[in-house]
Image 1 (cartoon, rainbow, N blue to C red):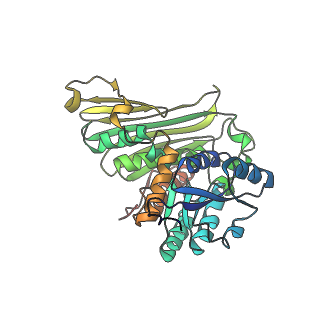
Image 2 (cartoon, rainbow, N blue to C red; image 1 turned 180 degrees about the vertical axis):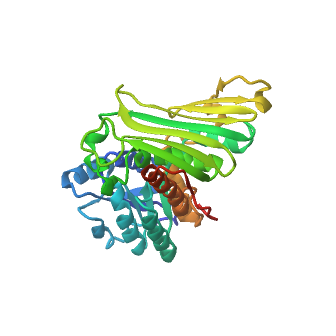
Image 3 (tube, one colour; image 1 turned 90 degrees about the horizontal axis):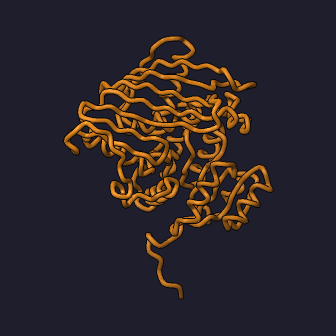
Length: 352
């Protein structure tokens, strides 16, 4: 007879739905997580599904998510599909009693996000949104420093993500409004707006401008610029673009406070000026091994571990449905601002 398996030792059976580019990071995280086992993969492209199953040891391949529900070994679903399929796939999984980790954005619209949240509550299952940057030790340390008072009261911030113009035409669905939901504001801005909400709280007002100056045959913007005012009083300027001529990525977040400044360059550089910590106003690069020794090096691994923790304990995820909804709502209001030319107010809510 096999020895009893404790809750911490049992392996949750996962199915990955969608075997495109982003699924690779999710599959690697499953491979490395001792509490998870890959039961199945699903993709319309049969060869792509077979290759993912072969490489990562899944026992089944499926052409549709509907084929998963008859398998009791599938306890949770990791949705890595184009944005317009997030809601239908997640709702189907929840209605069949499965926990759901869904790639960001939670959905293309607030209405879809509301349906997903309602389905999770009705099923009593976990709905977690893949805002994986919250599980990065770089951005996690940034958030801890700011909310812990290291830079004093936040007064202003900026977030920039610039990518080369070649990347998006290689993913045709991203260029279609009904499928991607928007351009870089929806595709990449969702990461940075989520981080700013996590660190500074909710935005109160937004003014947005968009253009499509470089990417051809696109129904969405290739550049978006936003001005924000947060409820805490801090101002923000954010700029997202996939129109860069230089074949390289450039991204950073900077937050200014009354007593210092925090700056993240790329994914791995964190700089801090803090009068309370250092006694001066110099910007220093921090040693992340010393600042966050217990954080996993891979944010996708940290994200998956948190998802499994929530399944095991019943706790609400750090990036739960209402939080993901709030980011999509901010983006919806921003697009409306771009259409009307007006500065718009974001409705204040008690959750998210």
